[in-house]
Length: 320
Ligand SMILES: NC(=O)c1ccc[n+]([C@@H]2O[C@H](COP(=O)([O-])OP(=O)(O)OC[C@H]3O[C@@H](n4cnc5c(N)ncnc54)[C@H](O)[C@@H]3O)[C@@H](O)[C@H]2O)c1
Image 1: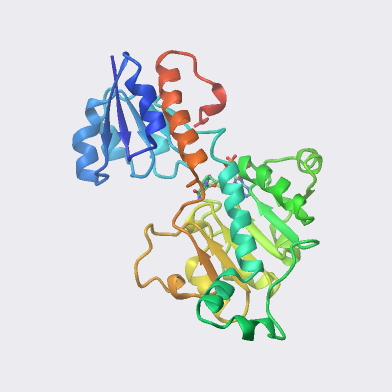
Image 2: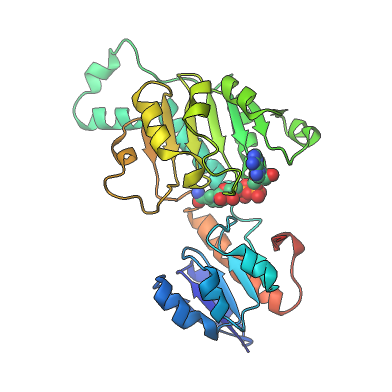
């Protein structure tokens, strides 16, 4: 019998799969502190991991561990060098975590372009009539606007369809995806990030957090963009420099932003981004739909089961 640790609570649909399979025993671990993980995890053969950081010090103690199955596709919360060295398999939810994030990016773009926060507050505060006669506002149509998608993977490819539905012009910057693939899906390949930034009305980031993408969008890059431009970051907080973004929004270098992710999660109460009205915020919630949460929990657990039953779908395995 294999023992599986469910690190951080997941939707019950995934747990049910383990409950009805006699070959597995499981325990849900909700206390994500390092002390707790280091004391609990050595007893397990497999781990499913949503939030929680599993570093080399913890892994060192997990002598039975054969597989980590991420509830998600990013894996910056696991020490992958250790996994590689010790032949521990890393799995991700490759098929279920892209529709909701792509929709979430559209939700943020639409919120900003249609002034949702402003209108919502205005109507609630009895300003309906005065808004009706406002001469100018900053709202804009998406049709014919240029969006630059940085990172043309699973989410980027779902996003392009939604953008084309809104008649936007889609540019994609991803050095690892060829022109043919991007053009086939209706986009235009950008070879130089700076060229894309200069053209973009909207920049959306869907890249993994790596040494190369850390602080990829800093003040220097923001200054290349149009003053009317909007940045949407649903990838990882550190891909966009938060301090620079705040400055850019406060000094008119950029118009607006949508952030689902933060350098530190949850962000500190005194993080100035929380007070910046030019930003639409959400709590790392791009996958928080009923469908996505259920499907991701099932895929996360099914991946572990398939691993131990030797029938792994190769597309779920991360090449370390
Ligand atoms: N906010 C959320 O809840 C949420 C949900 C899902 C994914 N994510 C984040 O979004 C990221 C993307 O997800 P995905 O499923 O599309 O991943 P993916 O691996 O399918 O696609 C990522 C793409 O980024 C490209 N890329 C890598 N380095 C790059 C670079 N330096 N410049 C440009 N492109 C680069 C890759 O070639 C790849 O095509 C994940 O790594 C994760 O961090 C966040």
